[in-house]
Length: 206
Image (cartoon, rainbow, N blue to C red; front, side, top):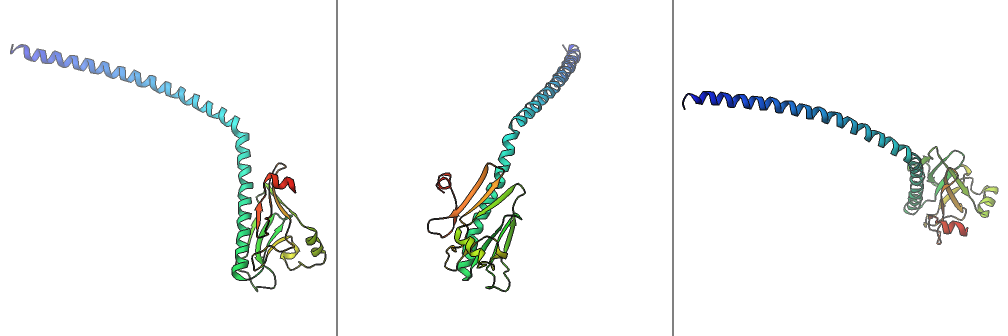
């Protein structure tokens, strides 16, 4: 029994080594096969992604265009609130002027009330956007009489009085457009305290 011990141990070691080498070869073959399968999977996934992007690109393009219009509308609405707040808090008439030709708008104190308006701001429209100002008859008459020449270089403007109301010569509608189909309308609310975004029903009534 003592003589058989080393031989048995040696035989066992050989079997372990053989099985280990055999196992390593199997593992290598499995890994190689997995690498090939993963590459095929990657190519399939990339192909599917390209197909999905090609199909959804028109929708995505319209989505980002809509975001420019929505962002501009929100900024204009916030600026009306800011102009009204300044008029009331500073006791000074404020004008939110709109330059449709240059694609710009901003707010400033009405000329003649402040030497320098350090809080005046100006914004440019995104290149894909346009703005239209529709004025009331009273505003057109006032412009002809040069009664609003002191308002931002005679541009159409929303005027806020120190009591927080909208001046009578303010526009009837301000319309932001993107292309020929997308647009956002602004008009004075019922009590003429500020402008609000118009719904489709309100636009139809006008």
